[in-house]
Amino acid sequence: MAKKLTPRSEDYSKWYNDIVVDADLAQHSDVKGCMVIKPYGYAIWERMKEVLDGMFKETGHSNAYFPLFIPKSYLSKEADHVEGFAKECAVITHYRLKNNPDGDGVVVDPDAKLEEELIVRPTSETIIWNTYRKWIQSYRDLPLLINQWANVVRWEMRTRLFLRTTEFLWQEGHTAHATQAEAEEETRQMLEVYAKFAEEWMAMPVVKGNKTESERFAGALDTLCIEAMMQDGKALQAGTSHFLGQNFARAFDVKFATKDGGQELVWATSWGVSTRLMGALIMTLSDDQGLVLPPKLAPIEAVIVPIYKGQDQMEEIVAKCREIEADLKSAGIRVKLDDDDAKRSGWKFAEYELKGVPLRIAVGPRDLENGTCELARRDTRTKSFEPLEGLATLVRSTLNSIQTDLFSTAKSRLSENTVEVDTWDEFKAAIKDSKFVMAHWDGTAETEDLISQQTKASIRCLTFEGDTTPGTCVKSGNPSPRRVLFAKAY
RNA sequence: CGGGGCGUGGCCCAGCCCGGUUAAGGCGCCUGGUUUGGGACCAGGAGAUCGCAGGUUCGAAUCCUGCCGCCCCGACCA
Image (cartoon, rainbow, N blue to C red; front, side):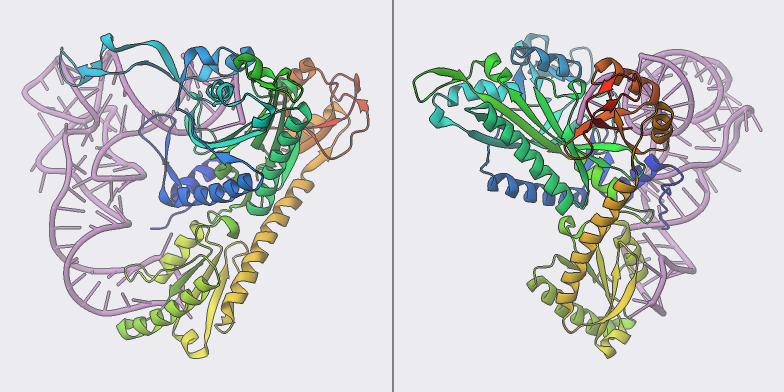
């Protein structure tokens, strides 16, 4: 079964789809735009969840769960919010089916029409803020720091596995604060959490910044984001954190009593990352051989493959492999021994490479004699023979190296492909060349729009770091307060 | 919503233009054997209302009409 991935150079999006399907991460479901996340793919997501959840808890947040269904009227309470999401909402109109009087199957029972239609949440601000009104009375109830892990539905026109599906999994944090400064600090803090997760766990370098007004979350005063560069040079928004001001507090009348007895509207934030991170992970690290996983998120960090001839040898070698497995396990390494006799070693090598397992340990008859094993790195595809003595220590340090090497490779790619330009011709050329482009922009939505229409590139963010000296707009020639980051995006 | 593609055992697909016995092949699966340091081989076996509904015909996977579904490329978005 010679699974051959489409090479990246030939067709990048086909390569991406091949990896998702062939590495057993997910498949298309029978429902348009929806996917089935398979056990191996879900295991990676579970790792992400586990780590992120820990980070949220460390920063004082608690998990809760709010309903999937939102009364239609809630959505319309915040004007910008409804405008942003109305176009992509799934609507529940009935609550019952009945047998088809004219034939087979079931039909919607017209007598079971809902008085008020329900929206399947595209995000939960409205239902959460409607609830917060009941939870918050006093400054003593603040800050309120809540996160939920949930599924949401956005009826997009065009979908792609993990990157944009009709239903997706995510977390959404929703916090309430007594002061603007505190809410802004929270917004910034959670963006830093995302950036840390992306870089230290996913080995994916990110650019942090503010969105422009037109790219802002519907209902937010400010949206912060992390943007990552995929191997084809396109930008992927990997996480967002929103400062919502008092918009939702006003819409849902959430006030608190201040120390001196006054009534004030609370200040809000929301922030989220989704299963889209799976797509980001794939497109940042993987190669033409298949998935490449950062050790810290790999469900299996090291796989042990026995190599043998005949039954007697098998028993002897598998026994040795079990020792190694126990040894690595007790050193806290997520290890799997694949002693399935129905598959040959060569098949296993190819399979675990496709699935991105960071390290492979092969033990054969020669190794048994020499007290060695073959250690193979997925990222560099290099092999070496190593003594079994002290293997756990070596495995741990190699996994650490893989993690840092993956990050630094991706980091170099990001910096090598980020350029500053000052003229329109240079700009067009750099965008065509799939670069991240730092260029001057006059700050108007008109110019932003014009540029994106003419080049397909959008302003990814006003970066936190980098050159912020004034200049002249690359498109209009008008004065520009600073350079901003442009790129083609997913 | 426009443009393109596809729908045939679990998966990939040939066959369709040019209708005709039993729908071909590969992968996977089951049984037995030989194998095992980079996707093994041999023998045997199971498994298909050819997306759905009509129509044409002595006869339809194949031709005609309608419908459904999915994927890919564009316009909206995380």
